[in-house]
Amino acid sequence: MSKSGSLPSNPLPAALRWLALAAALLVSAAHADEYTDVNDLVRSGQLTQALTKADQYLAAKPRDPQMRFIKGVIQTEAGKPADAISTFIKITQDYPELPEPYNNLAVLYAGQNQFDKARAALEMAIRTNPSYATAHENLGDVYARLASQAYSKALQLDGGNSAVPPKLALIRTLFTAEVKGQKQAPSNQSSGPVTVQPPAAPVPAKPAAAVAPPAPAAPVPAAPPATPATTAPAPAPTVPAGAAEKEVERTVRAWASAWAAKDMAAYLAAYGKDFTPPGKQSRKTWEEERRSRIVGKSRISVKLSNLSVAVKGNTATARFKQDYSADALHVSSRKTLDMAKAGERWLIVRESTGG
Image 1 (cartoon, rainbow, N blue to C red):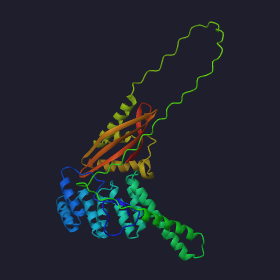
Image 2: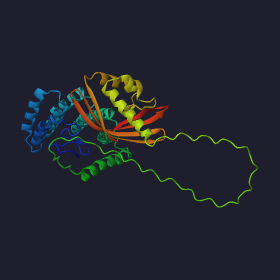
Image 3: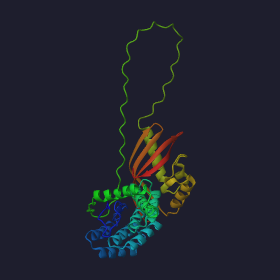
Image 4: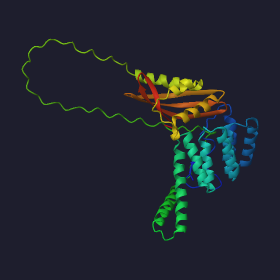
């Protein structure tokens, strides 16, 4: 099984990707040394000392998601999957917006052949972050495992069904190829957990405008009869270069400010009527969910950096790094907003993370 960081000592399903050492959570400078100390103990195989130090930290800060995530990893490394499952479940209950704990839960469930539970956990991860590529890949592997079980059961019930063995063989070949081609990921040698930043999607180069070949020379027609002079139409007003990009940037920053201020009217108004909510939710359900998550926080900070905007006609794409914090939660991610112009306003029509 490939993953980020060192492999757990207990076997987990091949192909499913595990996130180790809280790699996807943002580390604040104030606590980086304490996280680093625990991670160093894990890397050196001193799991008992690492768990003791993590528990000491959590005695003072019991809701800290970073250290709780690390504790779940330690429990898995120590061959205690039941304890690790309990730890990750509690994180999902306190921080349902984090997809990584759901992913690790799925890997642990799959290691116990509880593929239905693994599937449900991965579907929650994807609902939380529809752009979470690792969860999508793991979900495909879980579906393949479920298919293998179903084909095996079908063969037991009807051994004469000649259509089943080729399908079962194909699935088993897939797993065998994954194990043979799998390479162990290098151990994370950094001084502490890092924030995983998926690379921004490259902007496709615009094709050069086609140049029409010169038309063949034509005979010069005789001068037409004189006609009354007409007034030429006034030229369209010139739009300053970059004005649309600046307008989109102002809109994106206003959206982030409304979010941080918990101004739900302004925040929801930033989304167009054609906005597609994640996870096939209805617009009403999505708005209710966003309202409960935002208004329920005592403090929210949304900081944008590395903002780039590409405008093409009445559509635009804004990409940026987002540093989000709410109460004890701190998350850093790449985000993409697809926008469309409606009248004089730019509105969000699609929102994704990791692009």
